[in-house]
Length: 100
Image (tube, rainbow, N blue to C red; front, side):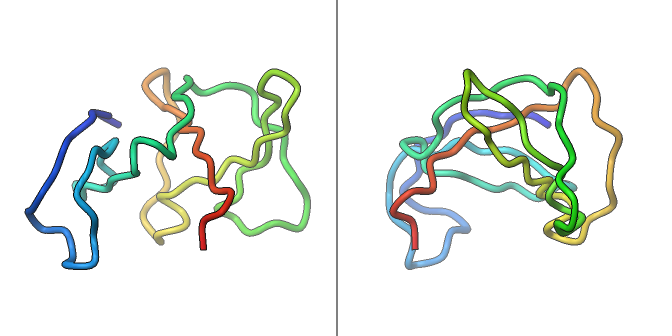
């Protein structure tokens, strides 16, 4: 997964999109973006503790400095082919509080 930061004002984004800075990444040759202000941290893959009775795309939780953070595999959430995690796999920590 290649991650970069972009500032955008137009392009293939929907008209409802806002101008601003986004962290962009690719999944299965498709480009996705997250508002940069929602991104708190990018970390390498680490030990993920499974959580029973969750959907397949919920890989489990991690302990990040004493906070329990759920890990969602977006490839599985978007019904893409799963890939093995590697040393290039990243976890993007986002703040979703106040998001509707």
